[in-house]
Length: 443
Ligand SMILES: [Zn+2]
Ligand SMILES: [Zn+2]
Image (cartoon, rainbow, N blue to C red):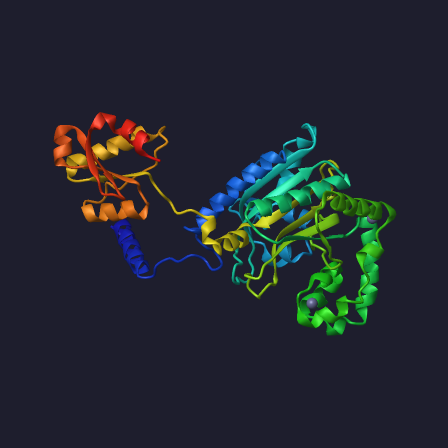
């Protein structure tokens, strides 16, 4: 029978593939303990700070139309041109894994009619984003971001509120020496004038620039200012600065931003080379850093995230005019920083560990676990293990204060033994007093 033959072929192929274990994709990483504990801690701090500043949570899809990113992030940016995970679906849709969050948040704002909600609308989210970059230390192709967006206010005090919250959040994570760098990149009007000046300045130097900058010269001239390549550095010093080309309105906006920062005592460093090369940004742009002697590179600045105003983003997506401001933070970066101070995360612990001997005791323990749902006593157990030694070892690993021991005799007598794991003192109690005894004894 031909059908059977086909199936046999499949089986032998599968067996062959068993010899080559499937490994994780390049640039991806599993988030496992202790990193996952930092992730959880960061998320709960976010939740707390978000509610303090009045932000609501939302989820946006990982997958969106490619056009969303082309139109808002910009078709000439590295993100869209080189780094986007873009593909065609079976249905023929051209889609992409989100390379950042703002575009999806703006789409969600428009599509859910949030312009009709009471304003301002403040939203935050958290999750993985994807960029097909060359993986380096601490940089992944799937990376987690924290994202905060403030919709519908063009007032410069909002820029400052958003930046202050970013600094507040980073400090709440336990990060020391947080610093804020900022700049203004003007509006479409004054930025155009500035772009022309920058082009005039760089034209005669084009030959000496790095390959990336040569191609950015026509596509995205502002990005020449944040090039990290050694050979491009000397030209920056004399380059014209955006702040000298701001129009009247943009200049007034930026002066107010700086004024509010000073009034609030929000420290900042002006960085004329900070441009955040994405199309949707205008006026205030900023980045967060930490400067720490323990950082790699001995006190080098470590970027933690950044953002800015994006008043044009809804128009780029054919939505209602909606001034907005926001920022994103890199979760892995921050988790790595926290990992350098092991005290900042506690090991998993339990109050009481259930140790069982024999089959009936195993079933009884499993039956008891469910009853602890609403009890403040934290318990541990492993009914998959029979060895007494292994179970006590496990109890030690979780720093259990007590062990609850149930063996054949205890099953017969309907009792349990409570063993103090420090003193080793053992006492026997009736099984139906278990919950009360534990509540009473656990400190
Ligand atoms: Zn302007
Ligand atoms: Zn360059």
